[in-house]
Length: 129
Image (tube, rainbow, N blue to C red):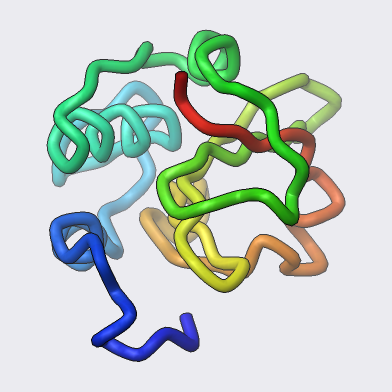
């Protein structure tokens, strides 16, 4: 992510991600056997931030205060519209333009928000209220 270790302020977040990275995608999943995108974000908020947020992407988008992309900060949610469906995918913004999400093909991964394939589907980002 192009961030030195000393600039990482939330070690619990990165420990969580390290522990879950590579977990396969499973629609409706909430365990190391498989997790979906909204489940991953739900678990991060519960286990890292100690906050309950809705479980489904369509509900998660309703609990954010919308931001411009340049205003995104670590812990903000980023939403994508795939297959013409509004808010069909969610991830958690990290630092320096990276986010973590549960990819249907690769499982839990960290990617650049401006990845040419996924960025064209980026729709909204914001802070959980």
